[in-house]
Length: 178
Image (cartoon, rainbow, N blue to C red; front, side, top):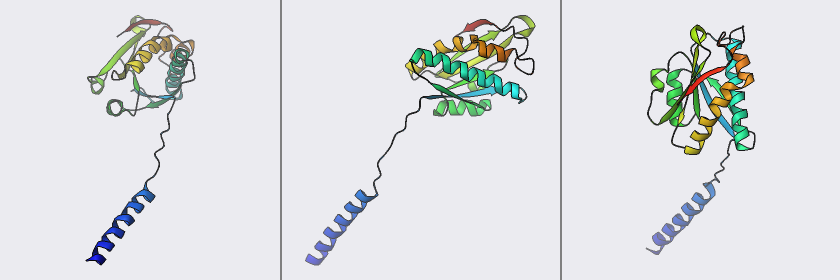
């Protein structure tokens, strides 16, 4: 009986020391970068990619100015389904849609939708900016940064690039709407 009791106590101490030895410290790395998905159904070209990058750079500058420190924006062109799913799971912080209409998968609840109309008449182009509303601070920051980014000279130059920007969009922001 004492042998069985001794064996049980040794086994308990062995398990406890094994559990302690296998525990690993958790390290959390914070990122000062914003993850932006772009939904653009136009043909993939260098000019289209430059347009996406110009918006990312302009958004970065607008956010950085408001935050008082450098905030990078990583841009990735994806499908509307992928953007909607990954916005909901937190993979992306925001989605920019370059299209005449907001794709159905991005008509989800719990998100803010801003839009901008570039140019007027036949040259009119639409942009939609979609982001979650669950983080009020981030939502406010993105809402304030969107018009600034769309009106930036860098972005408007990319819009008017004759080699494949949005061409003919007039080079100025006609309107933004919540």
